Length: 89
Image (cartoon, rainbow, N blue to C red; front, side, top):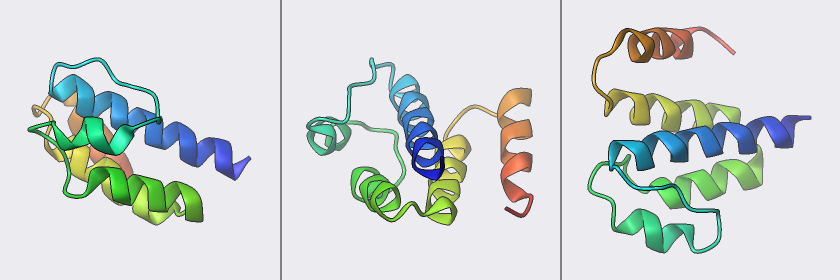
């Protein structure tokens, strides 16, 4: 189901961003307040994530994933994930 897929991608993005900040990822409740305190994150993360989930917008979710991965150290796994995101949907 598309909704499950989009939500799952959002959770993965949050997991990565919170890991980059060395914090435990929260649930979706009060997410904007928790994301606001993070130093390393894509711009307007909470708002864009919320909009992508509400609209089931895969392109927006891919963009957020790309931005989050670009913040991570250039490990082989990160480079592989970035390459995968450049492939067409």
